[in-house]
Length: 389
Image (spheres, rainbow, N blue to C red):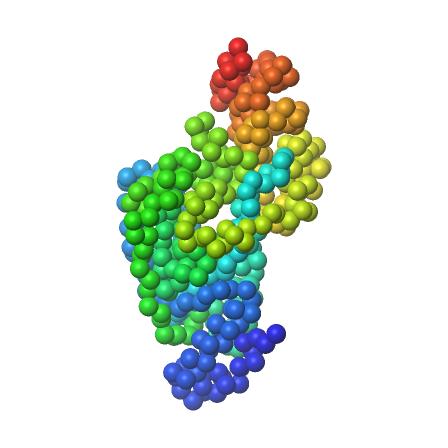
């Protein structure tokens, strides 16, 4: 499979004669696009390295309006930059890449913790973007792959797609089942024409489909009500949001499955790989001993990445998912989770046991009540017992 290096002589000759003259840059842009397609990307856009103050202003506005909770504000304002040159002073262009993926069919097999296909696809896209950046470096183009910048805002500015009301990027050919990746480069490529910021028209399918009413009609997501904002956080999830989890531990997708632009992608939806069934078994996740759990989390990390495979986070969400199965067969592993050191794991396990109920469930709750010291968990146990009093 040819790489960017196959055009190296032509590009370098252009550099020597014209210092990034128009001809050489056109060839470079074509080479980047061709190689990106080889690596599995479906669309490539280019934008400038101008700052993105509008993104910062929008986040601050949503914080003021309560759409972004104060405890989430730091993740947006501290972890991301709005000026690409703060990350790479010599950068002159941003290459933005969209990689389509096939969603998983719903529901997952019985007893298997659900997760969005995005979290399997994203690490593959990230690795492909890093490979593309490495090839550019080898022909003398400076790069920074996956910089901490607001990718969705850059995708709109690079003409790849528009925001939906659910705040996800929708690409014309692929809908919202895409992962977005960026590369800062030291070559002044011609920027593409920006997309409309939002072109949903009168469609409000995602607003109506959101199980917790988190999507505002005007197009902002209230993170205090969005189940995905709580998933994999390790925090205690508000009781009123737990049933909306279903049996998923990472990703909701309700607002994507109903979107008319995703109709073609949904027809191709497939079951998760069979090898994942055991790895993501709810009984196994909750009931493993420490050694088995370490091995299971390592296998999860191979699928989702290490950041999404941390013990406290996985177990806290798995307990909620187990409760939503209403399966008495999961009471025993939930009983083990009820003894876990992390408070939200125990709190969610108590809720799940109360939801499943039965004499065995009541006995587990009464036993935990006799030794529990956390106020958070005690309250969950009391509420769970009240359901069966």
